[in-house]
Image 1 (cartoon, chains in turn red, brown):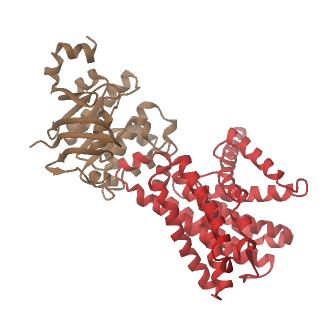
Image 2 (image 1 turned 90 degrees about the vertical axis):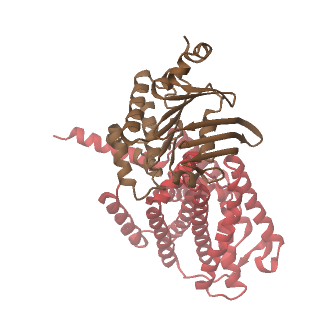
Image 3 (image 1 turned 135 degrees about the vertical axis):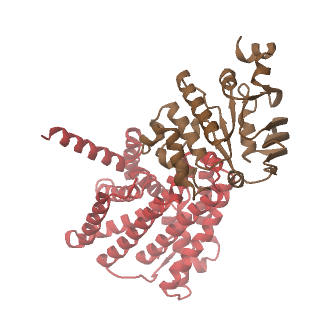
Length: 318
Length: 234
């Protein structure tokens, strides 16, 4: 399928709308959207790896955490400028991504998922025990340098980052690499039988996912100005990333973005009604119903609704 | 020297042996069928040629050994593999399925695509349809097409007729015959359907529990009484 002008028009309309948003909504809402932007970045990263190749990562906070911690430690403890600490954090995350990749050489499916979960737990323990003078141990760090101040600036920063990553991934996934990664998710043996080097392809997927997760994690920590292991290496955070990708529509770029915004606002608007962890039950329920009804996610529901609408209009026409 | 020479081939999945001491020779431009029941080792034989199993013995194509090469290198040597039609990429379009086959022969992709569409005009019509919505016969065409996109000189086809209606089997046979006749492509198919195999192939090899039981031309095997009882039902 080629790039149709409707696609481009929709993307442009979306970008213009998002750029005008700070004029339209409160600062509180903007802060919610900032979180949604970061969640979208993490969900896109998860989707490049798991949505495409079918290697389900239950340890994505491991990657995000390496990015966040590396940049935080370099800038807070060693006085690196952010312009240096973020690229170094991304490199560190890609090295971490190589470790993450090793089990994928031998195992798949639920076994792979469990091993990656262990990666996350291991990281959670390590940052508390090893060199707490650097990591801040259980309490983490606060007073980390921020890139910019204020909700509006941070909104523009996080949105730009998200949209650049989304467009870049959209282009990458349109190439043969994207096709091959999706093919691996559907039938890895057949991809090998067609003469493709699946090890290299998988490594590419892991590196791209690590690059995005590291970049997102590093920017996120310099937005928050603080970091704590309990919030980062957390099963709720993990599931929010996964559910965002799945609920929006895995194996697409727009899907994880839609899912991230949907989940963030759902959790935010449920907050006054259900202040505790019960909120997660609600989104679990919604996710469950959606999968039963349409496993391809919100994006597919919207697409089908749109084509039905068009068909109805065409039918009603002269 | 035959075009494809399989010599003393034993194949293993882990420690389990699935093939034992198999010898098969295929001449250039020939259609050869490997016939056997479920579990006889037919797919293992093709997997072994593709470098997807651990093997002992030797496999040579045009005199060059394929043993120990990666699947990629084997495809680049000119072996195209059409696995059972259940091994497509279900949520991808016909065209994308075909293009996955074109990674190793990028320069010839357009030419090979034209060849596939000439052979199966139906695929050209339905190029943007996702394959999970297609009929069994169409999927078999996609599987064959994907293998042809690698630009092979030897085409391996695993059970092309499994679960297909008789009419569709005839269409598939006709396509393979055309391919063989027009381009001189050497073809090795595996089959449970011995009658189909006999109608198509000049030489047949019968596999039983991983061992070669009998080899010969269609005429030779057609007159073997014991074999007729076991495989042809008459």
